[in-house]
Each structure stands twice: as structure tokens, then as C-alpha cells.
Image (tube, rainbow, N blue to C red; front, side, top):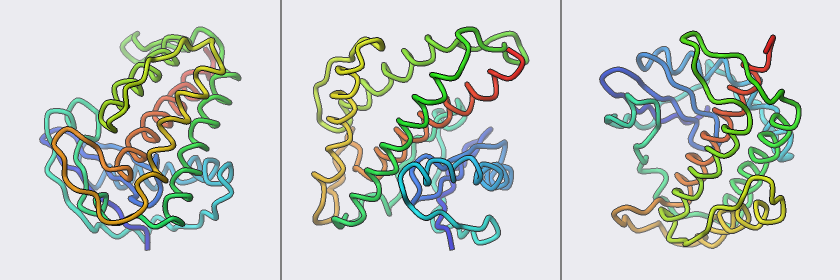
Amino acid sequence: MTDVALEVGKQRAFAAALDWPGWCRSGRDADRALAALALAAPRYAVVAGEAGVRFGPMPEAFEVVERLPGSASTDFGVPGAIAAHEYAALTRAEAERLARLLAACWSVFDRVVAGAPATLRKGPRGGGRDRDKMVEHVLMAEGAYASRLGLRLSVPAPADAAAVAAFRQALLATVPAAVGPAQPVVKGRWPPRYAARRIAWHLLDHAWEIEDRSESA
């Protein structure tokens, strides 16, 4: 079974596979979010392959283990609710697995960006960021995420590959650093399980958007 958390707002819902950071999709309601999660399985299998983690869950084996109330963030299109599972104690093996999957999300994102045209096909309403603006947006968001992990990091320039790598490594290091007892609930701070899920979701959401909008761009 694949444990899934549902975050349900008034206008949108998210379904997140709790043990697979980044495998998280949204829909107008819970059923549509679960359907979108199932459709994304082949795309997520690429991430798992990159990480060297066996991926074989079946969509019909989804088990909703937590239902979380949504918020304005949910309706805006961002998963913002932290599941109780994400405060649970983290073993060394779990931390290493999460870190490998998160690192794989960065690798997939970079590969998609490298193969995409600078100008992307516009959305149905004529909007959407182009490739380089998307890369900048993702980095800026990760700078904001750092503060949620108790880090003070300067956001590097996208073209500075060494600085970007060091920045990502600082974020990634918070996962194994949290090995041990259950995470305390600290207002404004993210437990590492949720941080991995949120960072990975943002990376893949935009990687898959770039892929989709590169077609016939």
C-alpha cells in the first residue's frame, strides 16, 4: 500500500504519497487529486530510478492515512499542511532514502531545464514563466524554505553552478541531521520529512510544467 495524505481546501485538494517526496498532485477535489497522483506515477518512476530506489506502487493500492484541512494556500495551488507522520522519528535508513530521492528531484529538474527551449509555450490564458525565470523562481522559493529549516542562506545566482550545488547541499543536509526522536512541533519550522516533500514537490511541479510547455514551444 502507498500511504497518502489528502489536503482538502474549498476549491482545490492535494494528494501526497508520504514516503515518496515530490509525488504529489492536485485536483478540484480529493478524488481528482488522487486520480492525478496515479497519472503521475510513470513520471515519478524516473525520479526513483535516478535515486536508485525501487518504485513499484500501484495506484489502486493508495491508502489515505491522513486527511488534512486545507487553507488559502491549498486553494492557491500550494500544499501547505503538515501531516502527523512528518513529525515521526526518522531512522538513518529513512533519512538516506529521503535524501537520495530529494537529490534525484534536483537532478531531474536540471536535466529538464538543460533540454528545454528558453521560450516556453504559453499557458491556456497566455501566461506562464519562461525557462530561465522558472529556474530563478525555484531558487528564490528554496531560499525562503531555508528559513523554515532554521538556515540562513543567501540565494545563489542561477548561473553559478558551484554556489547552487553548495546551497542545495545545505538544504539536503538537514534531512540526515534530523535522525533520532520524533520532531518537536515548532511554530514556523518544517520537520525534515515535510521539507523534503515540499521542496521535491516544487521541483517536480515545475520540471513537469517545463516538459509540458516545451512541446511545440
